Amino acid sequence: MAKAAAGAGSADSSVADQLRELGVKGVLVQMAERGQLLALRCEMPQCYHHKGRGAFDPVTTARTKWAPSRDHYPILKSAGGKLAPENVRLSHTECNQRDYTRRKQIGALLAKGKSLAEIAETLNRRNVLPAHGTNRWTAAMVRKAYVS
Image (cartoon, rainbow, N blue to C red; front, side):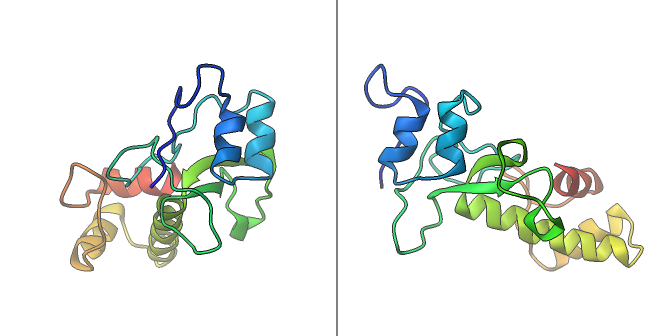
């Protein structure tokens, strides 16, 4: 696994150069070139990489969990969000997927009129992994996961 972190590589290595070294193209590189990405680190509210927010695998033809990914934020792609600097944050592919899956699960339960406490109970019963450092979902965690 390649590791790239803020300040990794040569002293003059820019975030855009670090992204290119990982095989990233497109909006993330453009954002870095414009000074809109300040560090090569997962920007998701919850990062799940065991080596931390700054560890990324190179982009390859085979899908990898820990490659850099463009996360549509704050407007999800499914809600019409576009890949534009004002609607993108850098994430790991896995962190992005977990966030999306959680939002879908929580949104469906909210649409059924469930309370945040009821949703937390449901997620715990379904063994949905909660945030790092915790072992159970709470109503506050559900709210934060859904709106962040």
